[in-house]
Length: 187
Image (cartoon, rainbow, N blue to C red; front, side, top):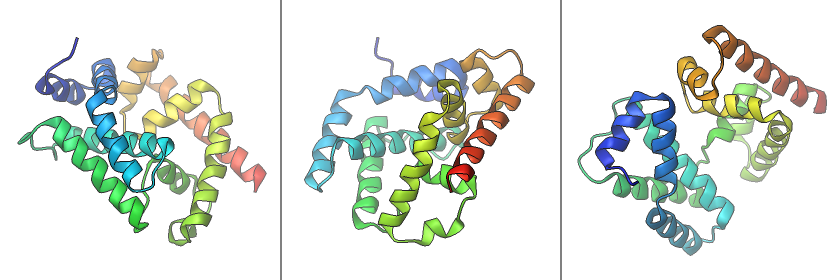
């Protein structure tokens, strides 16, 4: 059942499983996916670019809604479509490239010069970090993704059905520690 945009915004603001449900519904909007695919392919992008940009646009929209920066003056679909185009324009121009993987690299504190390096070198390092990230258990990958998307500890506990806030914090800490150790061992 498709929910109204007002309901989706409310669910995102509420957090927890309702937020997850709303974001999943937004990511399934075929007309937005079709428009984004057409736009990105028109500027030499591929399916991986589409997935990355669409995910980043939803994350941006989610953060703006949760931080009260989203003014519901137009349609949510229009907002998401504009966000996709802005992100792709920035990537296409190579002025900047921001997504949760770059956040992950800066969190890892491997080399702060990564963000100032040439795009090819940065992409290579991002792939290296993501290779180690992909080797983590599914539970660790999930908790770290939620953390990178600014989910609260309470939301992570609820979504992942963990027993307490302390267990959730400890799990996040151990997963991040494991990722840092794996990366350090490979360097």
